[in-house]
Image (cartoon, rainbow, N blue to C red; front, side, top):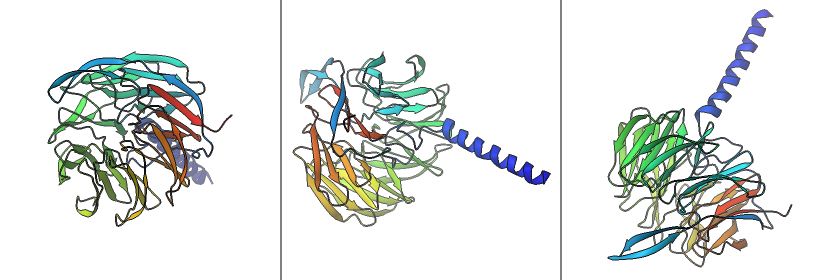
Length: 390
């Protein structure tokens, strides 16, 4: 009897430690969205259900960042506002966190959209906030990776040579993130110390996925890489053929990733091609993979649903302009934004349009759904909470 009690006590302690391990050593959970695309394999899209009769419950106006940009040999005045590619909102308890292309990192009250605090960086922030323990990790175009407390205080930062649009993932106590100076970094998220770093062929805007003993990331010069997550040793690389800003998705031991040349690739874990699909124009978004289907939008204005096993088109839907953001799939519905300023909701199995709602500005970033409420940023300058009327 005494032995049984001891065994039961050890089992309870093991379970508690395992739960704490999962909670404190990773930047993801099944209760909310804490990082870009929800988890380490980029396959968690939210909680609850997508609203059937959506209403704007509140909206928050971001600021404007002005700078001069070179375009086709000319210097132009440009204004940034709202959220950009690949910005996505993260939520913890009753607060949402996001970076804006107005150069600020924001914390809002999720119940009413009121500002709690904001932190100024030097340039637009496209990276999504990665929440780990009581800290927020996010990159900026000012060539820094920032780590802030959930109260908005700077804890550490890493200086890079170029922009940081990639979004971080903390897996088993290590942060993985890419930089546009052509590196993937493995960092101690508690103190910002670099554990290992590896050069890749060109700038990285993709966000890393971590699975088993591997970390996957893509780059500007058209490669998808697989590294050993513990020591950074290169395991393989696959030629995509063009700028690959899409982030890899791991689903049932297969890897899915889009490319600016319009291809969507499906590989096995050894980097061998299983199938590829060609859209008429480029793919910037990250695939959503669920129900044995792949959901992806393209600059060709179509949103595609493909078979995950063979890449065959099941259905497609035409928006008014190109689609850069990534989709969210919950229940029988899928939602995504478009450069036409709309957020669309379709039946995930048939592609039938269920509803659309305007944001009054191009949507480059991706929606999340937490507790049946949609959070989304637009280049109109606004952040929206969209849900059923309360």
